[in-house]
Image 1 (cartoon, rainbow, N blue to C red):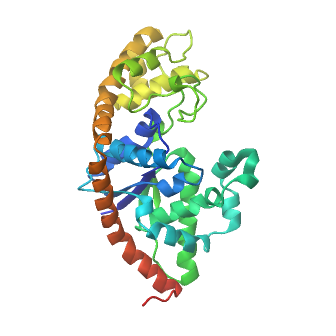
Image 2 (cartoon, rainbow, N blue to C red; image 1 turned 90 degrees about the vertical axis):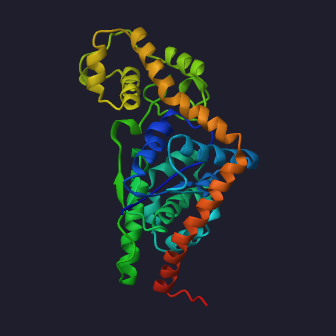
Image 3 (cartoon, rainbow, N blue to C red; image 1 turned 45 degrees about the vertical axis):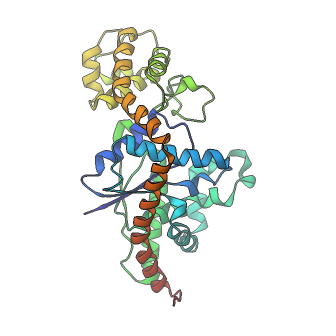
Length: 332
């Protein structure tokens, strides 16, 4: 069976964009692939993290995996820092990847901004660790959003260069799994900005732990325009807020945007927002409630992570040992 690796950073405030763009899809893949799902806490510390909050956020992401339907018994679920093979393979990939490759990474430029010289080396070398995350398990597929496609290309480049440098056919050239419209959920306050936990306005996003009242209020107050809904997706051109809400409705209902518009063509946003609120509460309410229940039982979550790490090491350990043998690192 083909193998999937994917991870979510424990950065707090998981929201609708995280759910539709990644976490929900994880659960849908588990019956067709050998799945490895990771809370990538080593990636999180590329910028400073409050230690207490980081522990809490690791558990929150784990809870979101389980609440969204991922079975920790059938899949490998763990936090990255508990499996040393990630960091060990990342160092080897630091010696395989080229500076020119990393200099082209647009995410580093965006995150470092004008303070590039003050950014951590970890933030710069982040893509090499991401490659190690994937290739430590010889994963064949990775579900990615548009913002991670470039990093996955780097993973492919590293795999090819490693194989060529040592004359082996060892690492697979991983393939992306891209889930279309639902991978980019935009802010409820600005249809041109991606939904983000870093937005100072909580009204800009639907958090996974929001209750029904909060979800309904945020959708009711979401920015729209004064035009009625069109009958075809082309009618949403130049209307980013309207397009975002229609996209959210389509994703939550597992329908195409044109089918949603066929139901609401010519109607105003008052009726549409009521229907969207009801749908969001129906789909997200149980996830949020289960997340809260799980977070209230940290011992259970820690057990899931410990058992998952043990299973992960059993897969990654022999692969790293083979890497050492290929490149000539002596082991007793």
